[in-house]
Image 1: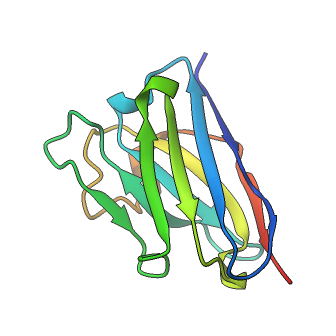
Image 2 (image 1 turned 45 degrees about the vertical axis):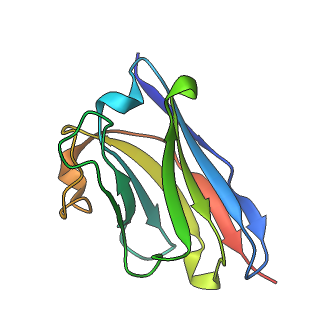
Length: 130
């Protein structure tokens, strides 16, 4: 059975940092491009970041303009985990964050299209407030 478990969310003050983790069972995450999405109350889900499989011809990472320079996506394949390091957090970053597996190995510039992704975690809540 395939399952994602996001963790690391919580309450942080503006300017603070959190590291989100996406751990999987039932599949090896490095076989796929992995995307991070977020959804704030009353808003549509949006793409945040994507990291390609280590075997991908692309080998690139992608970030939404709103998080470039502040967020970093990475893999630890020994732990079968993908991370999203979030620094300099802003109130507008508050949302439920989800990880998902792409059915391709390369993220490409269309990483934000949700129909590319096959498996989704239940999400982890990030709250940014003073």
